[in-house]
Image (cartoon, rainbow, N blue to C red):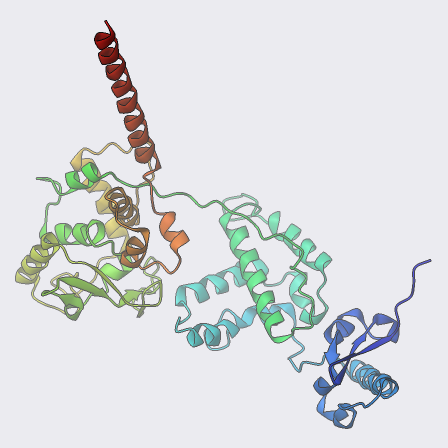
Length: 422
């Protein structure tokens, strides 16, 4: 027969006593979990007189006083030691969809990494389209169990998307679960004794569509005669492939960002949600920090000519009217440039962001250290930079070439040896 755990376990650590409450004391497991190996100095202010027991028997009596206090609070609707809002899942998740109320905002600001407006909008989209109204949102955060999480996951996995597909395995499914897991992790941050129902559930996996890269020869072809018809085309293409700037960073560049003496480009800002209609919000770059980018002579001359044509305005890459091109402008023109350059894609997925992949791969082939490439592209994590390298095939070909040369050298050596012996 299994041994029944004691309601209160008291032990001494140094000069002070610690205690653990078990569910046999009559309190719910979630409440007892908050009082595991706790010091008496952490008792609530209402039990101030019970914080310094001098003996084991007195410690048990003080723990009994705590149990009585918690049972009373439980009857009133709040037995948790840490004073947090008794909030529903829906209420907690919705906090993350507004910049001013998101618990993540303060955390990111304290790390000098302002929260992305695009991230907030994604959370709002996930909540409104896929989470709001689900029975899961009506549960109290303090009472959610692993079974509730699994049932919620099952429901959204079979939910139909606008195109008729089920959500399970899609990017939307992945995004929703990552959002909910993040919110629950942040709840645990303020409720250390609370058991996160996601802790024993593996996170979802999703393989995003890969972006391929152009080779060095293909990039050169883009700048060939008759490909880039206008000075504006030349300037934008150079900023993409020679400076490694993102679309939102290119059109956020101001004249003061250009250092003509070093030369270099100081990348400070980017348009938030540039691919959406709400692009006219200027904010920090994706990595939330400034960086320096190469300022090639080709780009320098293109910008000078652009200013001669359109005049110097607030933003470098804008029309004579002062308007900025839409995000679709680069996508549409990149396809046009590739066709005019006679580049065969052969099934490769080449998009505007492929310019950064191309630059990273070319630099890696030239022997530039990964850390330098990381700084140039403005990546927060080196793992992200590694994902931009598409030189494995070229590296293998070089190894194969060396093996071939070694084998040929061996054959020549053997022939010479045979000649000498004869």
